[in-house]
View 1 (cartoon, rainbow, N blue to C red):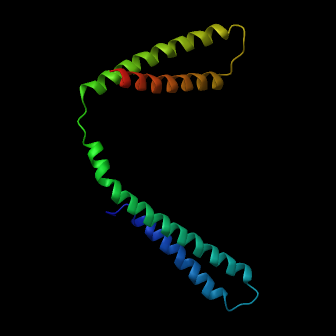
View 2 (cartoon, rainbow, N blue to C red):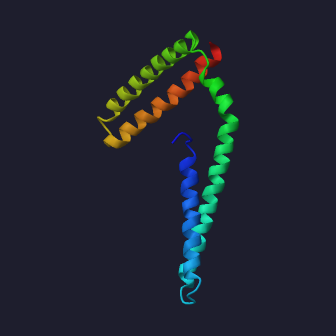
View 3 (cartoon, rainbow, N blue to C red):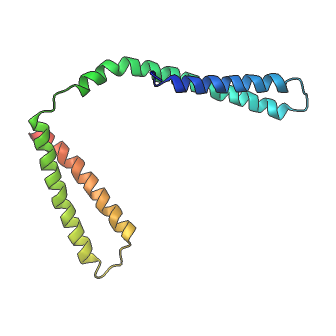
Length: 138
């Protein structure tokens, strides 16, 4: 499918069709009001999906030119320098945190999942902060 929003449209129209069919066939029976509510629910969900698909498609079309401009930017040497310095700083902090946790594990029992989570959080925070710092000053 060439258009990536075609699936959204097809699913929403199928939900609307299923809701209408269920309402049509269950409307004649007076005892099936519960099934009638499910038909209206399917119709409502299909309509909401259709509104979501239309708004997403319109928003994508308006932002496409801006996205193409940002993606076609030349990758310059300054970005390489920032990535390298941020990676070096992150590795340094990661080594310090690992050595500190090894030192503390002699006296405190640290579960493996907690230790890995701490390392991941510290590396994410330091990487983000280092990139912002070097981007600001370089």
